[in-house]
Length: 181
Image 1: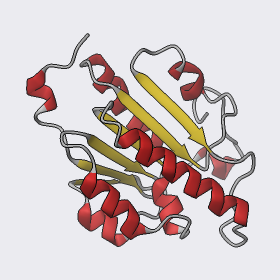
Image 2 (image 1 turned 45 degrees about the horizontal axis):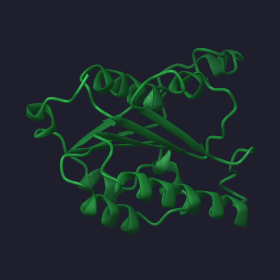
Image 3 (image 1 turned 135 degrees about the horizontal axis):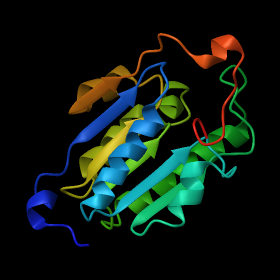
Image 4 (image 1 turned 60 degrees about the vertical axis):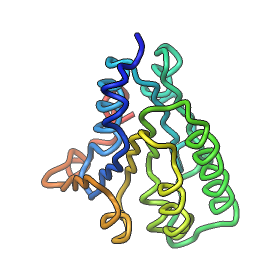
């Protein structure tokens, strides 16, 4: 399936999915699925998420025109004790994002958890905005994660905040394979 030029001409917005509720990455994956069904090439780079056999990573190997690159370390980042390794991994992920985004191969580009990386000062907000300003024309970009900086919210064309009202964690139910990972 090839992308209709009339669709490509209408791409180029920046979307933000943020907030403390569940579903930011899931929403981006749903959008990716829709884009793929319309002939788009899609990339997702995941900050702070290692390949641990997540459902989306496993499936990405089976889906044509979908590139998913987890760029996290094997441990979770502790925002109260950020290490040199955490900073280096975030900078490496940002380099991967820029390389792939500027390649011009993708119609939809999802940068998963970059809002957290900016919120925790692992990535500079100004550098992200500069990158977005220079991206290839007609490339739709989605930024996900909690803590979206005010500058990003102001910059974006669409901002959705997921708000937690109730969560299974409150009942002691941890992440479930196939639902949360």
